[in-house]
Length: 173
Image 1 (cartoon, rainbow, N blue to C red):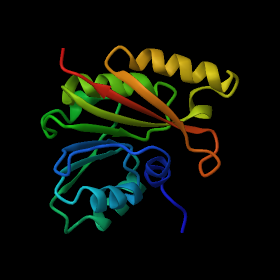
Image 2 (cartoon, rainbow, N blue to C red; image 1 turned 90 degrees about the horizontal axis):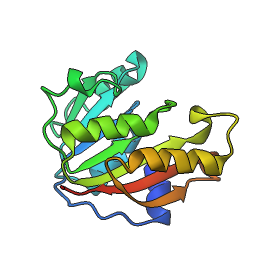
Image 3 (cartoon, rainbow, N blue to C red; image 1 turned 120 degrees about the vertical axis):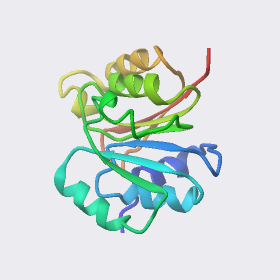
Image 4 (cartoon, rainbow, N blue to C red; image 1 turned 180 degrees about the vertical axis):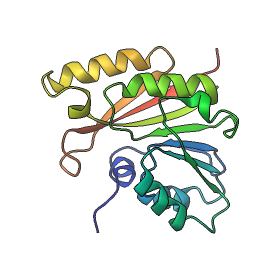
């Protein structure tokens, strides 16, 4: 079975997250990474945001009996639409293949993350198929610095070609 992006990341760079952390997961898909996250953080509430109908239906089935996973059928680009459901969180985990991924992370952090970790999975080709990888990483990092201290950029290749993970921290100012 293929490893998830989270598993690949954690093998390459340890990330400390409190065992009872509240997590906002943007781009939850069918829930493969949520299963990994649940095993690592068994006492954590995970708000799982997904916009695509088919993955959302699979997510609902997979976690129907898990009261710690809260599926939210919504577009991560519009956190104001689920702000009435999601409490403040300790970690923002993002895996959305959008050209404005960093802006989505910053916007969600403004709503839900006063301080804590960001793990932003980033498919570089989703941002630009023409710019060099290094430039994309620099530009995304620059956007993230509006709300975060970028701690690391971890390559997920070869397991996930053209993918990196931005590891960042938001500190209350």
